[in-house]
Length: 523
Image 1: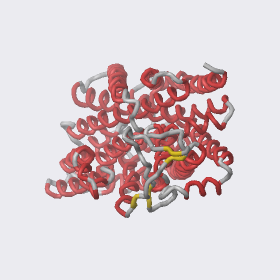
Image 2: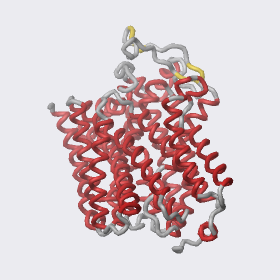
Image 3: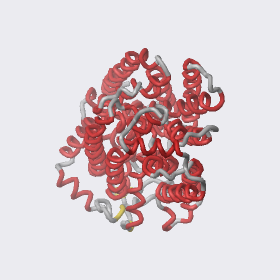
Image 4: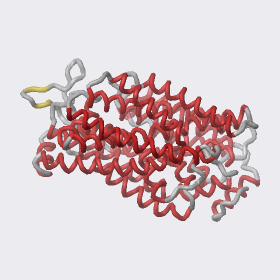
């Protein structure tokens, strides 16, 4: 290990020590009860609520996946995805946050998403709770795998060590941290990590632009590549039989720009629909200490997201100017942020910037594992199979579940050619279509029935798999992002089945009207 690599490692170790310290500080408070462990006792302030929600949401995808897309095929895909996410963030905070915070209290003080849906419809057999928990287990395991892939790529690129070994090391660290501190520690550290992430992005894009000869030089280079700097066109790298981009005379080759029509734009902007069903964000709405503070959180979150997404996309554009042949596959393109950081900054600073990637990964993976573990231990184990389970038993089952899910995630992440963007897009679609329509209808349409809720979840979740694995293979208009058709199908299922089944009970309607009128008392 040379001196520069050692300095990077030391800087990252310092950062990780701080993160572990946060876990230790909040471990005692987190283990007081399952509510404290899973929801922090509804004690989050507006800044922590906003920043932790966005940090846990964006993950390493923001620092590696999105710049990688921009580096590989130009502006369009990355930009329209970013626009959709920014709009979705704002609308979610605007219309969902307050009513969910209020409704979760009214619905028997629900502390998990499956519990909220179950209590919202006052079900006795816990069918909704079981189905929601099962989908959370499936999609968050996939999500955790994407984070482990990020860890593996980061450490193997930095230190030249085998990808699989580094991926497993990263997974072990994440699991130990999540076991230690619970939701409150995770949220506090996410707040710090959100700050590190936005600083890291900004520093790299500024220094990279200067090294590339200024903004004009970056844009001029991008314009020379067909479709690279267009909102309505897409660059097409010329690939050889091995799937690598062809290089001639030190210049990467591109074919003619691909068409980019309205359907494709809608497909990419559909990423914004995912926010309505994203558990790690929705839980922050439920966890804030006061409903009135959500307005400030919305402003903070929106500004953070707009800045971070814009800078992340531009990093890919700058990277293509500075390192045109450094990454010749779609998977390798996701390392462009690492390449820029290690080549542009002194070793110590590069180490702290690399900690930004690790910060994003940890802030997401601990959220995913914690929510998935709570879905099983709190909602399935205690909610269905052992209703008289003590808090201590719930916590034990949660930790065992967390270990099992992490192990499955590690197995999924063993393929070092995995593309982070693609893994995240599938899990994002899964949550968006399974829970997004149901969340909106549960909060804003009092005619929604239990049968409609079940149909919406199953229909949306199943359509994600069907569209991704079967229908999209037909190509053409069917190649759109699976979230859009699955979200629409789930909504249709909810409306149709709700109208065909018996109207909600008087008690359910009273809950709905109480929440709509601004009351958050327990029913």
